[in-house]
Image (tube, one colour):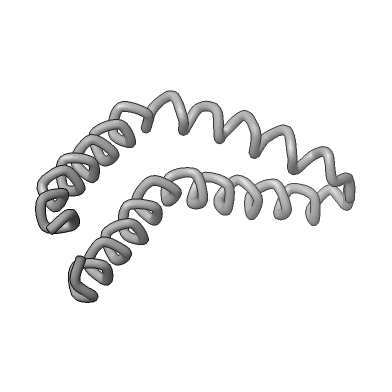
Length: 89
């Protein structure tokens, strides 16, 4: 395995991880901001009020984005299997 191949592989791992985690991170950030705005307006400061909505939104995002995540992972594994002869040599 050449250093260039190792760097390319590491780059693809980072990009794939960012693609997979992006829907969850964006949903959690948007939910957190909305809940914090509601808490600020109503002056309720309870940590459990932010956890439950984020958990529910993450479950919904998982349901909707799971097919897309599976496609991204399958594409990544196809890429890895295409590089396998170069990694062994």
